[in-house]
Image (tube, rainbow, N blue to C red; front, top):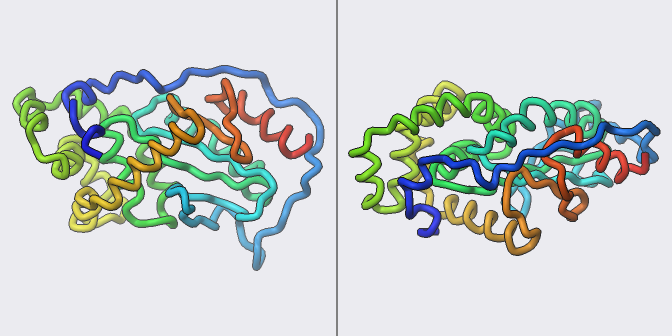
Length: 247
């Protein structure tokens, strides 16, 4: 845990190494062999969200034959682009039909990412995806605020107890206010930022990503528990999903 929060001054430079740029081919034709599965009670599979034993949050049919997992960092620009351009298509075309489930797991890269991740998870499964997408959409705004952090405060962060760092960064970036107007009261946000068990869960999830799937950058996608090589965009990922569906 402590190693994630040391070297704060370097981390706040927000160098986007490990945030992948990618391309790919367009999806081919063909009809998936896996038929859509209606949601229960005439509902919408994209409204079915729960937490997984691995620590992520999964949207959709829990028994979907194709399971897509994304390891994402909230300070990663490529992840933000997938949130805007790829995720809506993934949900509309495949998650709502019950053919594919979508799990998002935080892969924490730096203290700013950690603070944002703690807040995105603060209210549990229901608001998680929406709040995460909103943080991605406003990513430049809150990262820019950190880039203008006074040198004196940066110096204070170097010697600050690690458990106080997330709240200080969240306040400086305007993230506490950002989530407050989206339904997370300030007291609850501060409690989440100080939650050592929640912090450790994020650290453990990131460590497991590295040890189990050799994740070294974001976004990294898994399809049915296998890492997908060279796919950081929807154009590169969709053909792999269609192949898994038998298209």
